[in-house]
Image (tube, rainbow, N blue to C red; front, side, top):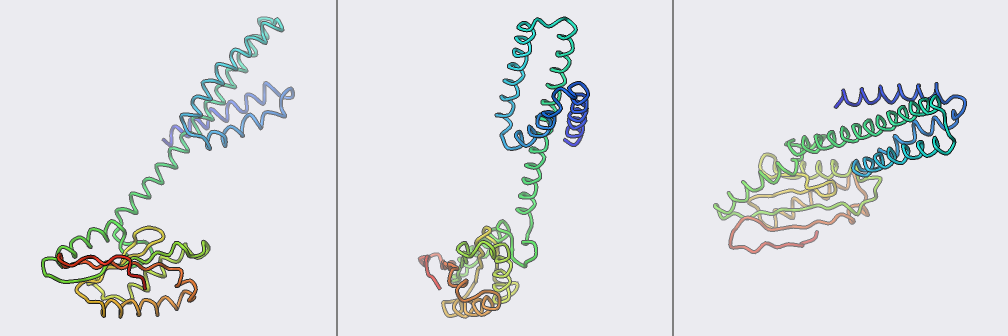
Amino acid sequence: MTARITLSFFFWLTSFLALIHFLHPTLHKYIFIVSVIPVFFFLLLRNQVTFLIMIAFTILSSLTFLGIAFWWGWSSGNQLTWIGVHALLMLHFWSVYILASSIRSLTEANKSLKRRITELEEYVSGTKALSRREFEKQSEIIINTMKRRQEKGYMVSVEFGELPERVKPTSFAKIATAIYDSIRKHYDLVGKYDNETAMYLLQNTNEEGLQLVNDRIIRKLKESFTDEAISLMNWVTEEIGKPDDQAKKGIHL
């Protein structure tokens, strides 16, 4: 991919300099537009669309040059000159297309790789919260164990999507830290469901234990958030564990 970008950039730069040489000063005002604007244009559109545009442009420009040559009665020398200019123009646009396509593909590959790395990480960066994949894996093991032992516990989601946009980027770390400092270490779990939801699992406890933990979390949250911000958080509790118990969903704090 890197070699492809390097090669396409080389042809783009070479054709750009050649166009300046051949067209200056006749069309020098338009050389910058022809050379730079297509890069941003191709980056904004999908590969399939830009490819069709390039095919259409290649055919139409060839027919246009052919029509002008017949209309103006160009001599053989002029025809050869403008054939060369057209070839440079095509080289320029196709190198721009390949360059933009390669950059977009590389960017998408990097994003996909980052998502994959995030999925494989056990902990969310900068916190002691488990990643969603790891949280779900450990939760399944704990819940199955609780069912065999006839124990009861709770799964709690803290949704903070209603918080102002300016505080969202740092909200998860603060909420996760407040939860982690309030639960039993190496026994209960705290994890990330998505960018706007933190979750924690309390095993082998009752409603009184749940309330004690929630009270501790609220006190911790008040160190970082205002009462108004805390009121915007949506808390959903689900009872887990005992197979003969009905899960209680939608219990709000």
